[in-house]
Image: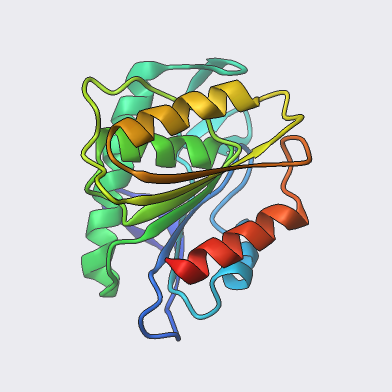
Length: 204
């Protein structure tokens, strides 16, 4: 299924009135199906919108280009964040849903972070799993009161705690209501991540 601006995606209608829809953003090498089970688990009955990243790194879909591990193509980040924000806005009209809460893992968390920093009006909130700051915003984003949960692994070699904390500081500078939780683990998700997500989403 596609809609302009051309993201292959899955949409699952919501069955729980009042639950915010989720925008599910996969990690490197994932696709539009990867996070659907997680979305169903952490937000039962929520509408789920799950696009596939359009940038290919070999055979692996991503949401923006990188030059090396942890080294991003800044201009591509800016372009892709705008493109994804436009897709989200179009999908709200297509599917009759409200502004979503992003749930992103790794590369997906980083593009969600870029949306918050560059297009703060695009999301109702975000759960950022193993995220760092992918871009420096030209000015603090207008995120007054927007809820954000950042989940970081204390032994993550790719997105270590200090890099995640820099993102937290950028979001907080824009007025976001940021909760940063450091869990025991590396870059992969743990059961504690799932528990924190589910509890946080139930409150928001």
